[in-house]
Image (cartoon, rainbow over all chains, first blue to last red; front, side):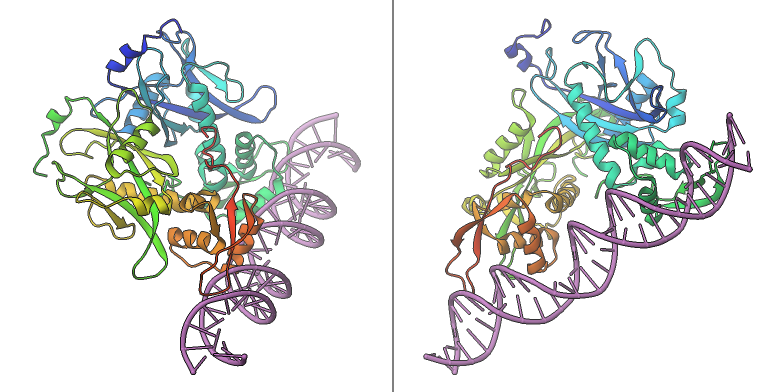
Length: 233
Length: 233
DNA sequence: ATCAGTAATAGTCATCATGACCAGAACACA
DNA sequence: TGTGTTCTGGTCATGATGACTATTACTGAT
């Protein structure tokens, strides 16, 4: 902790308020042929934790709302426009940053595959597989763990999975989302039965051609874009 | 909005960071003989929203963690020590306060009945039934609605109900907690079957004497005090 | 002392969701 | 033409749940 200021000094200053976001996308994986969970990180160019990877974020401007700040930070640092955005948690531990006390209101977001594919990687922005991130700056490993936990829970009781997919999709693609998020394989027939009982997806008359096997039917999501966060929408 | 400063003026100032808490307790109700959900509110003695009722809260001191700040504010304003405390949400809308922009990190808490009974009401601290609060200051009606939504969800999939109860309790008392929180009656026999299948409550050899009918057996909660918030504990 | 009333407790039954599993249909490729 | 794989529809056993019935054990009135 080279850059840790002494405690009484830090406590003179008012807490700084920052907004950060954990962003997930499903990307094709070289090894497994199945898509896996990835997330973009930005390299820190200043102390503390210089050259370590961190969540995209920045200070809250006085004239923007919290989700607007999250969206603007995403646009500025990674050029990504999320298909889903939800507040994750406010982290305010005293020792999160060795320099000054920082309270971070953290959002988590999902992006669709076409948006994620267009995003170019730079020297300071890179995609990482969610299951081996290495050492991140600050308490960001803990934050990502929590975001993953929320994602895994939410995918099971809400219709959030479709935020990972395009307008039309096969049931197998939906299953691949669940399998990538939950980290386990699901029975195709049983999974299919559940989706067909759901009211928020509808079959189209189109089939996905060009595959190696029987062409699967395409479906469309007909539910609300925001899967609902209680009275807050 | 008599006290609303003009917008450009407000936006010069940095956002203020506050901590508030929604506290729930189960209290006997005069009408229904069944206990109902109550929460303590504090009267505002200053503008804005002077004389309206509001959630207990205050600014975050630089040297305390977020849950510590919530706990201290509860102690200072209502003298209540919660048996459960969890972060609810960070509210940061631009127009939450007409004077200055305020970002509120809101917690929600439960208190046990003996603690709630000891709390004395004063001129500026009073208990209200959760189902008719009237007009509160700021956006606190919306915050209470969200806290109620979270409470109702969490009571169904976690063991949070025991935070409302003492060390030993009857199964009917647990059922009364569920009924008060969910706002509907539950079948005693089926409810009993579910609780007996749970692993985190154990039967004692004691019975509650003095009632009008067959004395019910007393049970004890054997699970963890913190029902778990994912990787954060 | 006896009986009525009510909660506490135990149990039954039909229904539904789920996991495991089987089988035919429809395609590409050798 | 056959083989392999996925897509799709189906069966079966199991467990959870809601509705319901019945017995037990107490208080309070007659």
